[in-house]
Image (cartoon, rainbow, N blue to C red; front, side, top):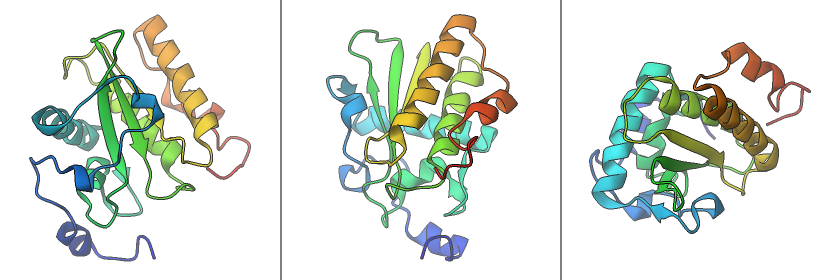
Length: 180
């Protein structure tokens, strides 16, 4: 059962930091198809920065009790986490696709919006003008979540600023009381 283990249980399940192991990372999905998928040191370097940004913004997986970036190292969930690709049409854009641990993960909306805000809202901390974020197609609410992420992205591209967090929550997939 998820979320009932201790933090030390989670720590024991994490692969070493600073290594790219394709066996402990999800396969790139449709959002990354046709783009330059990061692997090896390129993936590790961006993912280490991701961990720092997620710490600053509080992007934590509450089920497992750790920084969301650690999901990529969790040997219990080898098909979950983030994969990245440089956009084929614009090398100033990085694509990030989140694959949750289950197709009904109740945190997918919150985690992807929080990720978008961390990557795009903390100043010039990486080499990209924009990090686009989507949840994998395998999630039961991927269409609704990804539409909201596209709207958030469009607002950011247009204004250069992130909308107020309260505005994000008001229009999100949870607004109608529907499960994630």
